[in-house]
Amino acid sequence: EKSEKPLEADTLFSAEVREKMKLKPGQKMKALHWSRVDDNLKGSVWESLAHDASLDTAELDALFGSKSIASEGSARELKAAPTTVSLFDSKRTQNVNIGLGRFSSYSVESMRDGIIRLDPALLDLESTERLLELVPTQEEVNVVTTYNGDMAKLGKVENFFLVVSTIPRLRQRLESLHVTHVFEEHKGDVEAKLAVVGNACTQVSSSAGLVRVLEIVLQVGNYINGGTRRGAAAGIKFDSLLKLSTIKNNATGEAAGTMLNYCVRLVQSQRPDALDFGESLKDVQEASQQTFTQLDSDQRSLVASLESVRAEYEALRAQPVQDMSTTTFLSVISPFLSKALPACEQLKADINAQKEAVKALMRKFGQPPTEDGQALEVFGTISTFKAQFNDALNQNKAVEEAKAKREAAEAAKARRQAGKGGAGGGGGPAQPEGNLFSAFAQFGSQSQDDIVAQLREKMAAREAAKRSG
Image (cartoon, rainbow, N blue to C red; front, side, top):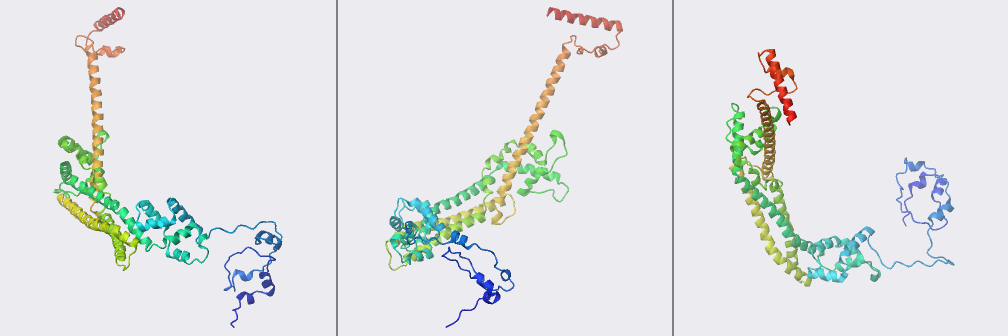
């Protein structure tokens, strides 16, 4: 018979310390499930401990003694034994119980039967997603199927796991069913994004207003760059449009602005029908938020989900013996696959067609080719320029309105001044009121006596007019 290996503590500590370490309570205590350190004690902090703390063992017994369920002569009644058996941790049990609350109108057995029949009343999209969260793992299935106790005492969660574990390939079937629920929605999302890209291509390609604006920009830019290697350009890249708003002119006050303001002013005066070119480019901003990289990824995700459904379909169809749950599953999945797989191929063709449409657009405007991942950035550039153009147009209009108001005010002032001059009579200059020195200036070289006489006459006439008024 082999002897147990001696503990390092048996030789490391003194007999006195070992006795303190082996101190036992006078009664059964609550369990403290700790992890012992029995090796590598030499040189550790544990080696230096003297174990000389004073313990009140009576207090420890009272506080941490194990309560007896019943003792001889005790007047306390025995606590009732648990009526249900829980085999899983409290968090998992709580989560499954919450999930099962959605199916409160079903018994566990009716849920099983509904899953086998693929009952649409039970297995709508939300319920299918909820059930996928509740499906037991293989480990959980093993726990409930190997339980040897009273089956009637199993808790609700344990009973659910036990009953649905009889459905072959439950998770795979629910995942396949989930694909049938979400496929059309996900495919529709990709199709909607493609439609936006297609609309944006058509709008930009057919925009005569945009071409007229580009013509003005090109002419202004060629003049500015005349005599340099940048001049005499036959065309420009779209991103060049965004630089116009960064170049300020040399004017001050109301005339201050940018090269974009100047180009817009030319469009206002010479190409007014192009001012609203942006109104026809309604989808460029949304199209700029898409990428062919993401659209390709979305399409591949759809294909992958269908492949998983097809793999499950083929696996079940190959079974030599097929129960009702299998035949029902096959009858639902077969027509779905017959429509969904060709639809995915068509979606791929549609994406490729839009790629070619964008390439054709770039060729039409002489833009350099780009990778698929950046191909739709052109719409972001055009969208930004459209906004900048409108801002510059509004700025120009504000300046013009302010100028018109100022000129109108000056004209009104001039008319008032002219009216005052005519009120003096004889067509002579207007008489300044309340300023005698200014009044003398209008009489030129007349004698002092004549000037005084005329002023008196006018003052007397005014007094008479006031009295008669």
